[in-house]
Length: 312
Image (cartoon, rainbow, N blue to C red; front, side, top):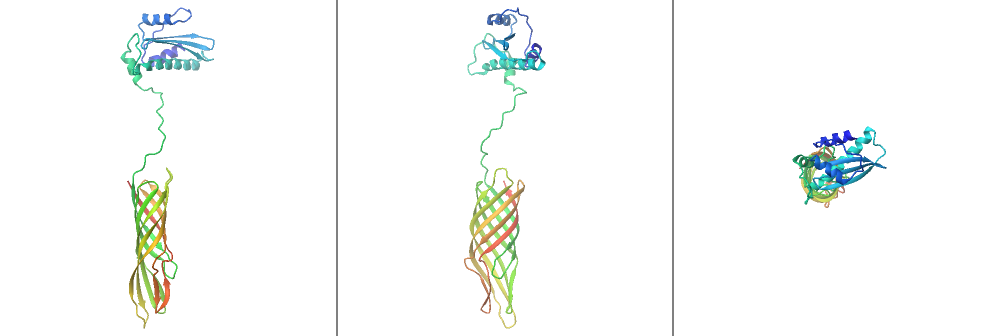
């Protein structure tokens, strides 16, 4: 154990002379006398005891003398000696830590620069401090835009329609979001009869407020909310012989629900599946020569599949 203790102390840049002491009962006075004779800043004596070993430590830099009994059954094997040597070194380091106190004790000798440097340097075997655990910092507001294909469906005799879905989203917090969106007409639908054909194109612009569910660390987020939209429909009549056709632009309002599920494929890009469901307040009606052929908007459903770009 003596050799291992010397190696540990030399690793801390201590000079370690070995001194022979008469096999008298250990005493503070004798150990302090030896330390002064050798002009040492500290002295250590290890003596057998009934439960293991007694460690006497004289620290002249803090003016302290420490007696500690270290209980062990293994003092002769290399592993047992190494463990005891490390415990003695820790005892010395604990004494030296008082040098960094706001009011350090007045010792017999001033600590040399090497001791100050040793106390200021982190130990190589000291584990890094564990990261603090707590609530994550609040995320800043997020903006996103969506673009993708959509289909507009409504019972009543017309449809479906092919549209381009576009949306801009603002999420001021993890739980709440706001959106403005549009369905831009691409493909028309028609209704026909003996009197001719009526072709319809539909588009809408709306806004919604949503609640957002996004578990921490999950790649997905779900949003559901409510809003309203302005709906535009253009009806063009192509009559058969002996009938007259007309073209009309109709406007109505539709309260709606909007839901969407987004899955992140990169930190800034998501794939979204959205759906709008609403009811037109003023229901467009298609008539051929006074005969009702189709109605639209009670209800209306528009699923879409979008790519969403998020920043920051």
